[in-house]
Image (cartoon, one colour):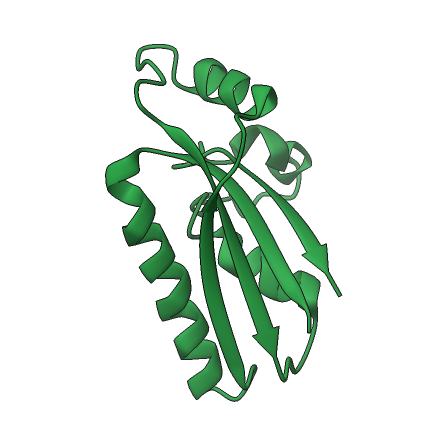
Length: 127
């Protein structure tokens, strides 16, 4: 069974809300026939220095505080379509899509226009 595993740096108060957001989006995809079933399993994971550094770099005026690492394992059944495309779709719950300019010259710098992640994250995909 394929799985998408997000590891995120989240405030404890947001952990359950994020799990519900993943479940809600997966429920929409199930209703659209893109998956037949999905489970969201949340667990604690050790701190990730790269995600802590990302938070500090992108949010210099806000301390990490009580944010902790959580793993959101999304077990999928009956996937229709690309696992990578689904992963990118779900990642928008963590990092909102940037509003990109129409000008092709300015689009050369898309990476500089990316929005700051609500929750710093990493992802692994298990086919």
